[in-house]
Image (tube, rainbow, N blue to C red; front, side, top):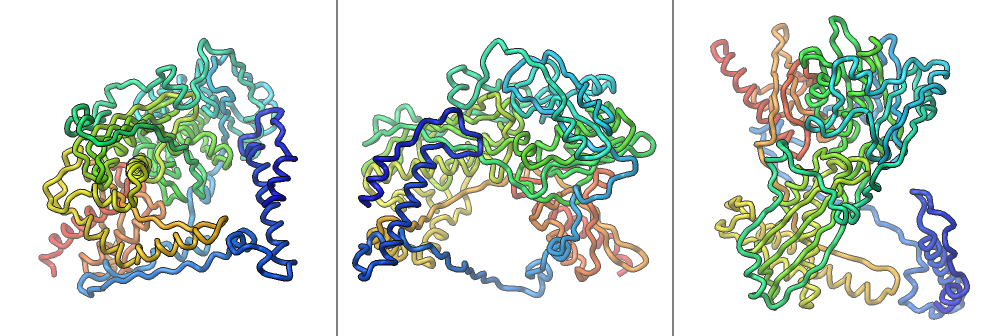
Length: 631
């Protein structure tokens, strides 16, 4: 330890001569890491070369011993009723053999149509600037480059330069100004993928400085009052959720604590990057194959962009190689751009983003700032709470209002707080639009609430679990959430106590505390926390067709959900087989396509499978009713 302190005094980190690259850790961190590694090596040397084991105190030995993670294990217990087969059977995912063998085809694996061109976007390099000119001279001199598509080509088609979640939210291509680094400015079309990507780097966009500086981050947005303004499309979202009288409640609290907490973004890292194939078909139809959680939404945007009726655009998605919200809306710029290129040139166009381009253009989980004020009593009861949440939306709305709505309606988590108020604000910043990511808004909101509980526990020197249990919703079914939702069937306390007992939480927590006391450097942790996630059927509209082939009785099923890894096709097949009383071997799920079922909501929010299965059961029931006279 003395050696490490001596080294720390002698080696002072020098200041960086210039800002470190985005993916490089700060110099101070790297200096601290070097000291830590040296110290671990020093302790390991003492333990290895010393004649006596006492040379290295027991409390320091954990730093010198490499950590070996034991093999994880788990157990699942379930009962099976043969009368419900195959619904309640542990059926292997239907596509598992294809996926594990590498035979499953994703959009990027599909064979290119004849005479297919390749495309790659030209991206803005400025966070906020006016476009003076776009010079495509060098790019067009590259052998194989066919054309550079810009907003002017959309105008020539009579289409709309829009790919946002509502009209005017986000342009396909920037025209007069750019609002962030990574915004689409143009699209290079070439005879092969590499030529298109290389030539895109040769397009020169000349900028002039804007009249005001870029807004970078939530703090900047608050200072400059840069917020996304309400419009006719945001009326369904309420930025304030309130219960009781918070202002009067403060005077009744034993303690009042205020502060703020923030969370950073989280980049999408799905296996399959954004990609699309736009094929020009006979009769002026556009066939779009896209890695998307919402083919119907893509069809709508493409039709508007190329000035066609929706019946002239067919969009499909066979399966998606990872999505988690990143393929709800952030595939729109690429899909619409390629559709415009295909319609302009009269040939098929396909594109797939590199990992770097994908991560720099598709946004991330929203960063948040939450300002809280907590009023509580000596026993840990929370009497009053306000939380004002600010989200870094980026330069457009995307789904910021939707996920803020989810954050606010579920932030109460498992706790009844009689006087409660939350507000939400979407900050407009000059960064690429942030977007949905797994449990959008909800996990951040739950984190804020759990942070509140921890603050109360720390302030009163009470066990965190005790404070949680003190503020749980009651199991009497009389309480409601701050949004007025009744909690009729709440089983929270039963589930909590059962999990606590079965996991031997109290004993394991004591063991963790004993280990941490005996080891200075290696620590263990154990935590028990509730989590609420609400699902509302009003957001889901899905459809299913069940077709029985007359020659052999086999069944072909089509539905509007997208297979994104959740096994939706397997669930639908199980439900239909159960209802019709046939084996799974007789069922085939066809690919999602708007040519078969044109109207549906997006796949997301953890409710699509259930909605599609419900539709499949109804379709099967209708089929049985029609067959009844012949049975």
